[in-house]
Amino acid sequence: MTALTLSTAAAPGLRADAIVIGVAKGANGPSVAPGAEAVDKAYDGRLAGVLETLGASGAEGEVTKLPAPSGFKAPVVVAVGLGAEPEKDSGFDAETLRRAAGAAARALAGAKKAAFALPLTEAADAGVVAEGVLLGAYSFDAYKESAKEAKAAKGNGKAPLAEAALLGGKPRDKAYKAAIERAAAVAEELNRARDLVNTPPNDLNPEAFAAVAQAAAKEHGIKVQVLDEKALTKGGYGGILGVGAGSASGPRLVKLSYTSPRAKKSLAFVGKGITYDSGGISLKPAGHNETMKCDMAGAAAVFAAVVAAARLGLEVNVTGWLALAENMPSGSATRPGDVLRMYSGKTVEVLNTDAEGRLVLADALWAASLEKPDAIIDVATLTGAMMVALGSRTYGIMANDDAFRSAVHEAAEESGEPAWPMPMPEHLRKGMDSPTADIANIGERMGGGLVAGLFLREFVGEGITWAHLDIAGPAFNEGGPFGYTPKGGTGTAVRTLVRVAELAAAGELG
View 1 (cartoon, rainbow, N blue to C red):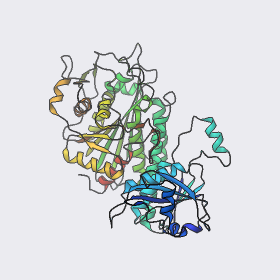
View 2: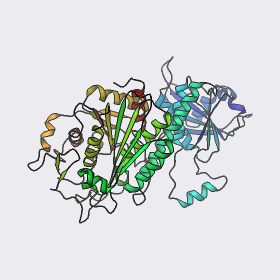
View 3: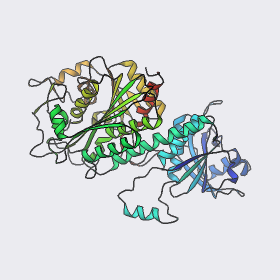
View 4: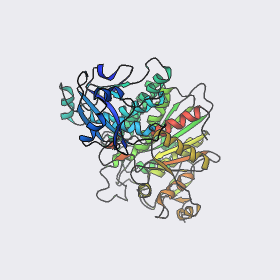
């Protein structure tokens, strides 16, 4: 991962491959953002004009490279767009800085060191810039031999940015150091979640995912328990077993428990971990299978959030439940029309085996409920309907408590993760009535994302506050990279969960 340092050095005398500055989009053309005064002075105060001549406008994410002025030890200046110039006496918001830092870090792949002279007015700004750098510098090349060879060679242009110095930072200030340390812990675990999502399903089946969780738990002092097929059968986890019945790779339920001796609150995070989703007997149509390795992104987010909470030493107890299975068609697979008896004792008629995520989550939600946490949040790439409603960059939030839904939404916004509160219309529940079982796993087609949330609510213990995050859209980026978001796995929801845990630790959660 890219190394981070705080520096009070002046930009002209700093040895680096590049100096990164911010450029805003003003009413009369681009304007140089605070933090780059020394750079602008070296251009005789005409840097904005030079950038405009080169075609720069200051638009968000725009990257313009130009030779550094005479006397600079860095050969290149990288100007990154910050978007619209803020109103007088107000600075750039956190997400703007985070995205700009990410875009610059991505553009500097192959560089050994870059100095970031972006606006830093307080410790929190240093934290978001650091986070943007670490997330933007991410790459997944584990399966590219040519990339490995290039990274091993000197002068390659593929390796992620090796070091980032944040100019204007205060190396001896406790708040600045804490902000950098938090950014490093969260970003490293988020990038680990991205790695898991990007790993091909032939190498990441439920057993392999469980092994990764066990190794991380041992490293960070987290208690871990793994239930295999035998234990799941003995315990009566019919949902997880039913989904995994068609695969040669058996399902797992992983429980990760981080505890703090000073904790006053307890949270349970539950993640959908379908390591590959073919749709089962209700096979997905052509063109919809190729990215289904990402169907475990919810479990990856939960895993990363629990480890991040442990690394940060948050004063809250956090339990992560990873419901892992592979949904495959075979002679032993669950069929449409089968009835499963869930861990809660309720029976579910399976009308569509491609509505499998809610089945594994139902068992894990009930297991989490039995421990009576103060709140439960589940995370899942659950429905295409949520993508239709909110697009590919925003996830939906449902909850059985309006205040809690609002609190989770605010945590998401603070973290830079676009989300939107969604309703749970009671009239949609009737569509899941079954003449054979207690409930069917699908209901009305219209509002399918909301129907899925209503199904999950049936398996949350009475009196327990609960929220459901449907991350089907933003969990996997099939388009080009933007800001600090790469192509492929994004790590969506990790930062929201960590922020929720921080609020709970501070006694400020709803």
